[in-house]
Amino acid sequence: MRLRLNDLQREASRTIRTRTQHDRFRSELIRVLGPPVALPGGINEVAYAADEQLDLLESTGRLVPREEFRLSVLVEAANSELDVVRKLAARLLPTKSTARLLYDPSSPVRCAAANRLPHSAVKEAAKRYPYDDQLHEVMRRKSERMTEAPKKAMDVPFDVYGRPVPEVVKQKPDADLPESWYYRLAHTLCSHYGTNLEGNWEETLATRVAASHYATSGVKLDRDMLLKAIHDCIEEREVAVMGEGSIAPFARRLRNESRLDEAVMPVIEESLDPVEELLESRLSSVEYLAKADRLFKVSKSVIPAGVKKYIVGEGRMNHTTVPVKGTIPGSLTAKVERALDVYVEHWNREQSLVGEPYKLSWTPHPMAPNLVGFNVVLK
Image 1 (cartoon, one colour):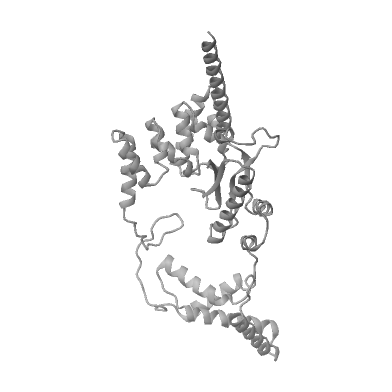
Image 2 (spheres, rainbow, N blue to C red):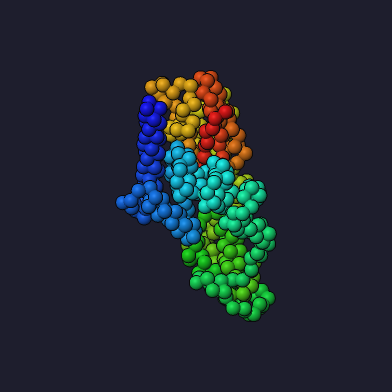
């Protein structure tokens, strides 16, 4: 009788724990995906609605907000007994954490993970499940995308409505355009841009106007003649303002000298790279982690339940938090990768000093180029 009572207590505890995890996952889905999944039913109804919402986002080309989900909740969902919950976890977890779901007992879960993993990983899983038609269909689509030749962009001009411009007769530069036409165009350009642009804008403007005119109408303008007309228009305007005295030649000479200085002596602006400064600074592990948290705007969360039970100091009042994601200042360069590697090394060293049995790693975000994700695993 005592053994049966113990089994009953163990089953009740497991049921309560599963129900609590499902409630947390349901609340997380409603928080991130919003009203489309806020249904009055249980986890099954909300999970099916969330799966349809993800299909809608992917089919319309919109970004799936995977980085807004808490990683600890997704890890719990990946260990759920319900196939639809594990399928959602395979679609929302970081790509690095989705690989183990590729060998899930349920075929929909395997296919959801296969859609986010590379062709080589899907090919290995297909060998293990030779009778899974859906998984083989995913592998076939990935193989076709790999063998497709990249389409060459057609050099065809389009109008403002996206319709191709019909063929026009090409002509030589300045075939039918008189000098007066260039003068009128130069006068219009000087009236619109002469007082709004600074520096050596005449050459750039003449080049862009000639290229734009050729792309839209197919008529090649004489860029040098247009540039000469712009300079003549500017000189006439200066003469009209200053008069015919000795000030006009002096102003032209100063203007030419300033243009020469801009061409010969470029201004070099020195900027301090915060990532390089972080790498070159001689800081302790604690100081480096604090400075890197501010630089990369690292978001932290509590340790996942699957890892927390192995912590040596689990009974401490201050629970250890782990990094979840970070924001890169700019793009993912070699310096940024080195700074993140050093960050992970310092973090793992600090945890080893207190005897904790887990290890941190980082991975680039699959959708947002300025985000990185962190993953904690047991050693």
